[in-house]
Length: 285
Ligand code: R5P
Image (cartoon, rainbow, N blue to C red; front, side):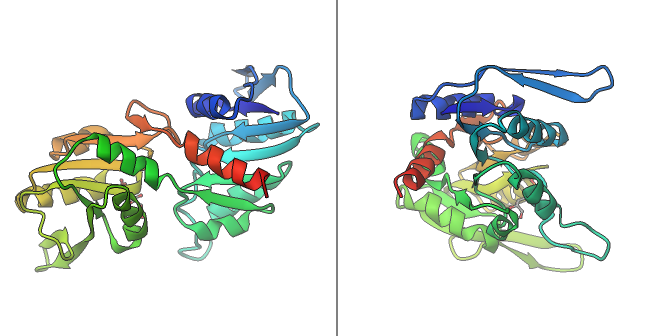
């Protein structure tokens, strides 16, 4: 078996390769003069693991090209970050279900798919091949443990994210709660933990995605007003668009960390172990 990575998943692919003891395929990425993407893989084998986060349209196209380049082998696709997965419903008539469109396209030419902390596990049903969601909640919890905070309070930004936050908190047996928005008047809302007082606590807000940082920055400002001793943010997919990192730090968030599913300078957590464990479990079935 060999591992192909697209351009924006090279670090994670190398970590997966190291843990599996499987060689990486050297791949050249360029463009034709008209802007169309081109790639060329060196030695392929009869079995290929393609590691490719769909962080933008180019990576979507590179993934399709990589799958096609490996058309002579049995292919498994690892999509650590599945872009377009937040448009998982037709919110109004005339819209596409973008997550479905992407999942269908990625299914051609692969036997199996792994994704990491997908926004809505319902999207898995849109793949035309067996697809599994891998959680890195234990790795996020491990990172929080390394921060050596005193009795941290792990908070989900909303009730929908509580399962992930609970799994993270379980690593250290930490307190866990979710934030709740209460409308105080026409103009005023209060965001606070549903049951646990944040005053004097080291708070870690955890989420699947930090995109613009708006959700967490608003929560952080309110938690500071409520007397939190410190506020940290940890997520799986650090999309960090529109100046999100600065926005969070300016809002009083002491540290912002994400994983290598979306490679950037805050990717201190790795999804490699969880991915390799899932692949091995299925291989031994
Ligand atoms: C929403 O359901 C997600 O779990 C995240 O909370 C959301 O994508 C974060 O977006 P932003 O950082 O733009 O507030």
